[in-house]
Image (cartoon, rainbow, N blue to C red):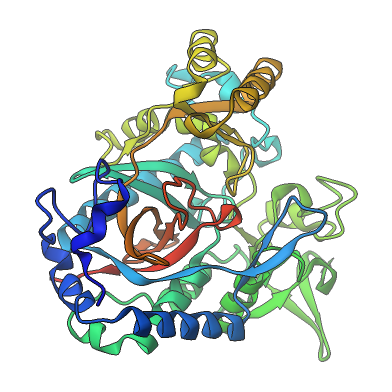
Length: 482
């Protein structure tokens, strides 16, 4: 049988465990799960794991691992044991997330208009105006509804009973929501009896709410219901499955740049029936590739003239160009001040302490303490371009120190967090593994936070890196209802 009594035997008990208290008794939200796990056999779980792998392989849920001679497509590891969040914990997180995304949208409006936060001395001018993610072409433009970031993935980690921290804000083209939805489908198929023992908040309405959000921000000259499409870079993109999945679930077209044309002051999609106008474009490619006439001239992924059309109020681009500055890892250090400045409130969710290598005193601290810190590229993602000091060799730390000295503004550093652990089904049985959480937020006519989100889990023993590109997996996230 799968007995959680031996659960802490792998030596990770120093970390906050979300299933068991310090005395080994289950926390209230996990009581039914612990009882259920005790009734399961290892053989049955292995069979269920094989069934889950077959489901994801059949659906084609893959991701690309880059860095080798060529990208390798893999099925993302899926863990069978759900992560459970109590109703009270979720209410706290939801309030904090909503406060944060409202403040970040207000920040984006401000920096592309009067820059009052810069005038007030709350954030240095060079942090905004000399930032690679800042888009001067957006100055003075009012996007529909004054919403810049419509779709946000807020990465949250836990380090204690009430110790929730925002690790980063993803406001450009956040991914992973398809895994959240398919994880839930798989769990409902594999373990219906476990669902019957819990009141789990649903997540399946996300595609419907996404479409409602997109439809709530039409361009100025749209009469009637807006026509929506998802713009993908194409089948070779690591998140292509998600692009196709969301377009299918919303009942809208999936298009590439070559399918679109700007003509007569409007955006059209080429179809076998002729041209059809589009009003809202949910883009899943970076700013630089959106429009070769305004940004990278060598881009074959975007649409010539798209940005001019957007500025003229003839089409809505979601998320708005230029949102990347609000999830820049150097700007992240100022988010508590951003929240206070625009809401007049103390941040509900804390930041992780962050050292900016662009500041001399902080850079010197980082260089002297690389063995204790996690160093990240300001515009890095996917777990690439990181140094995890405690796990790095002396040579790796020395090489990274030279990178920091050469381009200090390109790096920030943070303490190594004691990420919470959740139970995972591993070759040795049930064992604690480190996790984070990416709730998905929709911002249009109102703010909608999907209950739960995507839990990413570091499947390797002792690892703190949860990214799928670095060997991490995912698990279903259950928010319990009162």
